[in-house]
Structures are given as C-alpha cells and as structure tokens.
Image 1 (cartoon, rainbow, N blue to C red):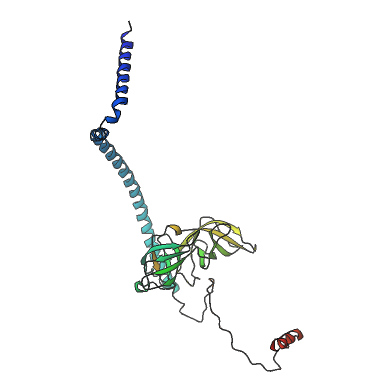
Image 2: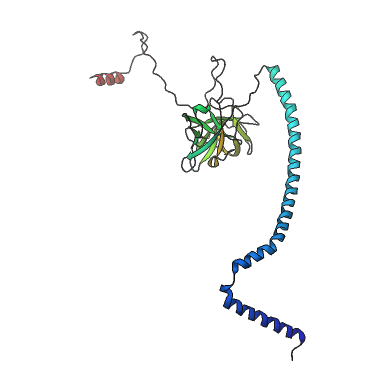
Amino acid sequence: MLPPAERRSVVLVTIFAVLSLLLLVVGDHLPVSWLRGAGAFVFAPFDRIVLTGDRLFAAWRENTTLHERIARLELENAQLRVEGGENRRLRGQLGLPEWHGLALIPVEVLALAGDPIPTAATLSAGTRDGVRVGDALLTRDGLVGRVTESWAHLSRASLLTDPNLTVACEVETTGVNGILRVSLSPRPRLLLSAVPLADTLRAGERVVTSNLSLRFPRGIPVGRVRRMQEDASRLMQEAEVEPAAQLSRLRQAFVAPGPLPPDDSRLPRPHTEFEPRRIAAPPPVHASPASRPARPDSARRGVTGGTR
C-alpha cells in the first residue's frame, strides 16, 4: 500500500533496527581486537598516503623558509666581513689592541638551587677541567652568572638572580652605563640601576657587559630593556631588564675566563661592582702634642671612665 520510496525506507529502518538489536545482544562477544586489526590493515595505505603528502608539504614550506634565511645570513656575513676588516684597520690606526675571542669550556648544569627562583647552579666541571673561581658562566643567548666555588670535578656558580651578584653593564647602542642587580620586591626582576636621569633609555635596547666590569669580559649580552622608572631616591633612574637566557631552564652552558687585569697598575679602574674585601686597620700615627687635635671634654670624660 506504500509508495516504492517509502517501502525502501521502511526496509532500511527495519534492517538497521535488527542489526542494532544483534549488536546489543552479541556485542560483548565480538572479536574487537580482530576488527580493529582488520580496519587498521584496510586504512593503513590511506594513512601513509596522507602522512606522506603532509610531510612533503611541510618539507617544501620549511625548505623555502631556510632558503630565505640562508640568503639573509650570506648577505649579513658579507657585510660583517667588510666591517670586520674596517674595524681592524681603525683599531690599528688608533693603537687599540685586537679583539680576541673567548675560550669556552662546555659544562652541564647538574642542579639548580634557590626558591622561588634559582640563584645558584652546580656544574659538571672543576679545576681539573680549567674552571676557576671568577670565571663567567654563559649560554649561547647571553650571560648567566659567575663561578664562585670550584673543586676537582665540580663547581658552583652564582646566577644573575643572586642578590650578592652585581654586573657592570652598558646599553649597546648608546653606551649608557649602569649596575645590573636583582630586586625581589614586589616580584623577582633584574634592574639596571645607577643610571643618571639625563641618560636616555628606550625599551627594546640590548644590554651587554661593560668594559668597566672587573669580573666579566666585555660585550656579553645580558638582556633587553623592558621598561624605565625613577628609583626610590628620585635622583637616578633604573630600567627593568628582561634576561637573555632562561635561568630556570639551564641544561648546558659554557665557562669563559674573566677579564685580564689592566696592564698599567698605576691607572686604577673604576670599581662599579661591589666586592667583599677585608680592609686592614691603618697603623697608628704618633703625632706630637702640638699637632694633636684637642678632644672635647665629654670625649675625655668618656675615655677616662672607660679606663677605670
């Protein structure tokens, strides 16, 4: 009594209902693993074709990007060679010493110490590997810290986040000098302090180690300026610096020797980085009674009372 199209629909619905009931009854007894294996065998060629096409497209896109990067690096390398030759000629005319590369010792960071941010690192090399106290610790991104203890096969380095470590730095483009230190309040951050208000700082400028540094070689990247503000005294300004290296993700690093002492000891270098020093008391000076300054009466009474 039904049209042909509706009769076919009824037949299909009936078949689907019967199959559904059969699956509900015997579904737990079906060999699911065998069916999965058969499906994987049937669709494996299609998966390989799709993956091959995707890899070819990704390789083509990566190849294009690498070709562009190689072209830019070749142009930059050629420009650097020209500027390097010009730099050597100018340094020779000015009588300046040649720039020598750093002798790097590869080390592995075995452990990080510090809370809530790491302030020290244990290194896998020691004095037998050429690591000495005072050497700089750096990665390919920039400065990380300074070796403070060294043993036969291990050493310990203080990171830039150590409150006892300061670095004399300068802004690469303008030559503005400052002292890099860590500030833990209100949050851990690196600050380039002791910058005069007359000096200009811009966000994004790169900060490197200064030639005034007594501990680190010059020109090592430290980070980039993030923002500027006046310090608490409002007489100087300070800049928050984003570190170039991720201190919490250190795995491999390099140890570089510190700067050489100045050739002429008669020309003292400015001490911009504080270093704990033991100062001996000066010898007593025996002055004549005529040249000895007179003490106040209160001071004489205090001394007399103390000797009693």
